[in-house]
Length: 241
Image (cartoon, rainbow, N blue to C red; front, side):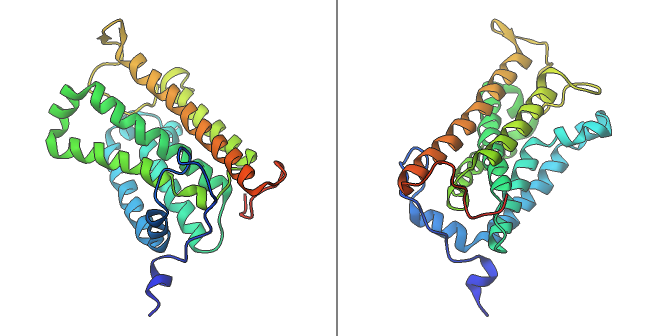
């Protein structure tokens, strides 16, 4: 039996990129691609757990808004699909860009609110689940940084990811079309005072900043890749949109 074929594929070529856009060691990236199907499976299990974690919000909000509720599970599903598509030889720049945005944004936003609102999060979840949520979301950020091996973030794919996560941001915090805002439940009331502002505004501020961060990183990766290739900036990657 071909173990490598069952678990992944030979890693794709690696561009010579600066550390700030490709921070992981090449050896670690190679391992991720050789065990791509294992990473896909882990992310699918995480997605299932995430949907279970959001079960109370699904019950409370209209069905039409459900797509905006499971932020982190949506991100892990996207990276599972992106890596799975690559393993099948059908890489998608759009899937990879969506996965990158989601895993960076939610992988950083969740630890941010877990730390900022730690007393009530810890009390509500207990030490074990609190630690699991913190570590697993940081791992989402780590896995996002293998995706530059399967996409060079063409502008069309980045535009799709930016548009989706901007709409999601608006639904989560600012202008829900139906019912209430759809952000992840926080352990305090949205309007509860928090120093000079409110709990909702603290969470929203983090979400706004962390919508911009992956955009900056993706475009930085795009520019660094094209510089490394010495290619025309309009050249697209070889993967499908």
